[in-house]
Length: 120
Image 1 (tube, rainbow, N blue to C red):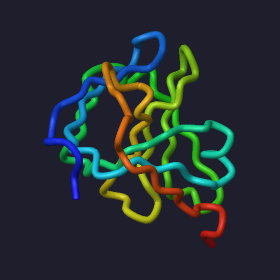
Image 2 (image 1 turned 120 degrees about the vertical axis):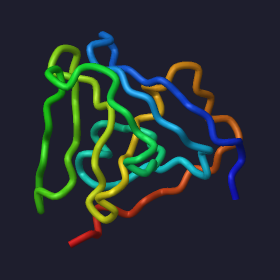
Image 3 (image 1 turned 180 degrees about the horizontal axis):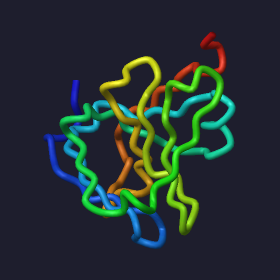
Image 4 (image 1 turned 60 degrees about the vertical axis):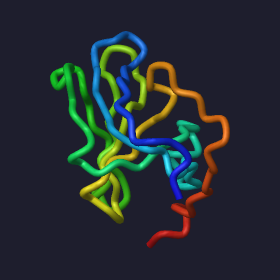
């Protein structure tokens, strides 16, 4: 069950080179225990690719892949901030770093601990 109505949010990396828009009702937030997510310590919301739009910064994005090389983790080449990633298990969805969203407050949204470290 959703805790908010579906809304549009603008997100950006720290330097502003990358800007994007998402639409979500924040049914939950996710933390993952895989090796990269633990190190980047991001809190994410899952959105379908049709609810994501890159507004600027394609040339400032850099990708990192590891293990099965399926998930694509995107970072800003300028400031290094993790902005989003294309998910491994559901490749038509993106995990969005909610700390990049303008005016976002996580209060009252359930946080699910994803078990990524145990994935083969």
